[in-house]
Amino acid sequence: MSDREVARRVFAREFNDSNLQQGEYVDRSPNFIVTPTGVICNRVFIIGVLTEVENIGADGQTMYRARIADPTGVFTVYAGEYQPSAAVFLSTVKTPAYVAVVGKARVFNPEKDTYYMSIRPEEVNFADEYVRNRWVYNTALFTLQAIRNMERAMECGLRGAELERYMRPFTLDPAGIARAMDYYQVTPDRMDSLRRMVVDALATVIDAIPATDSVPAGDGMALAVVEDLITRMDRGDGVSYEALLDAADKLGYDEATVEKLLNSLMDTGRCYEPRIGILKLI
Amino acid sequence: MDDSIAPIIDELNRALGIDRNTLERELTLLIVDYKVPVEEAKRSILKKHSGEAAGRARYDPAGAIAQGVEDISIRLIKDLRNGDTGVTILANVIEPRYREITTSRGTTTVINGMLEDSTAKVHFTAWIDSPLLFSGKAVLARIVYVNSFHGMPSVNIGEKSILEEFSSDVPGYAVRRCSLSELSEGDGAYDIEIEGDVVSIRPGSGIIERCPICSRVMQKGQCRAHGRSEGVKDLRIKAILDDGTGSMICVFDRTLTKAILGDQLEAELESDIADNVEDRIKAALIGMPLTVRGNVTRGDYGRILIATRAQRPRDDIGKLARELMVSLK
Image (spheres, rainbow over the protein chains, first blue to last red):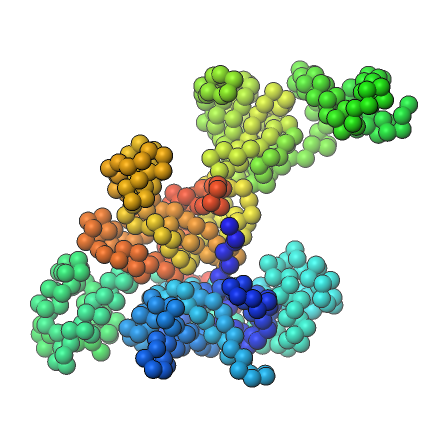
């Protein structure tokens, strides 16, 4: 049994600045990209804000392009007919929304010196603010460690196989560091600017409120279901509360639950009551 | 004397403490006279004398300590690997009890229990009787060996092992937080904690049927050992957790499934209302961070974390981020 590729955590800016590929171009063999700090990614795990979904499929083909923002930049995610569940998710989701994506890093290299980085999703799901903040913090920790490793590599003055051997005790990516060192012409300035990027990213979460228990596990799903119901039932002048209850009941949500979900939709400003007993999404 | 024999005499003398004349006589007989291969000669002499050597040492524990205390290197329990032999550990004995077990050579009484130091807990079996294991004090156990038991390393105290009472206390084990890269290299671990994000849900999650006889999961009403029968419904989740350094399959039983899915979804799954069960579990869990405690077992299908506890982490990210920024200034 071959080992599963670890899902790496990288910020969008560093990810998009990567254009070094590693590995042979043989069918089915995993493709890797090497980031400027030497992180070797095949699978990545990101959480950000979905800001835009476009249907770019020509001639009725399924192909969605989604933009997912983190504090440093934007990830591009493409989902086509071979990622059916991700495509369905992206075609129905309302922006903006916190989403989590597990996927494979892809490089598109249409002409010399032009590279477009993207992610081909394996899993896409709703996330929440707390989980996003946590991802920013964890990704900051990983990136800082990678920067420190790169600085250690610069200090030792070794290159190539010697550098790789030297770095082995410190990192899971000794080969990535050795390749990135030569390819990206790594300088202390570049590492400083990456460190500033991490600090700026951290600054966006320092006021994060601690997680609360108000949204128990699993409710993100229920919220999405109710929101989706309202969207589909609304013919222009809102949805009656009774009709919504009926529809929700068929999906196994009782009145108390629907009430709770509606309250939380209203509290977060995603839904309102234009007239008593009539609901509309914003 | 044959040149090839001298180094072997040295080696065996060090290992067994048998006097050199005896060794030279026996080695010469085997290697020079009978032309036995060197390795085989060594092995047979080791075998012949090692019982004696260990026996002698056991009757004279003070002497054994005086002789070798400097060169005994005590291994941490977390570093034990299947197949290790001649290991020395220093550990507290937890819940020792006699058990009758059946082996290929008939039934025998052993002592079972757990050993702990500050780094890990491990199951042990003592094939010899020793009051030291019941004294409630820490023991210094020498010449023990390690094999795999239920997919986790297990310490064996055998005929050749030497047990000594250790005068002061050994700090106990408190659940250790491990990275998944560490666990995906080891031979399994008892009662550890990890934190990771759910990146995939494996098939076989949700409502499953178990064989009423052996509790194996049944496929299409068939148990692979007991054939067709009326299965017992159960609920479980197999999720892949990834912490950015490694990944592992975690199995959550019915109670934990309830805890991480929430009562509502769990009740729906139980009552068969929900269709597309897998999608709903995915929608509830993919991307979710979890702190999981449990045992890592290593078996035919790789390493699996059997969860005993699971919860969503609740760290104050704002505070952590501020502290990290201050440390960077």
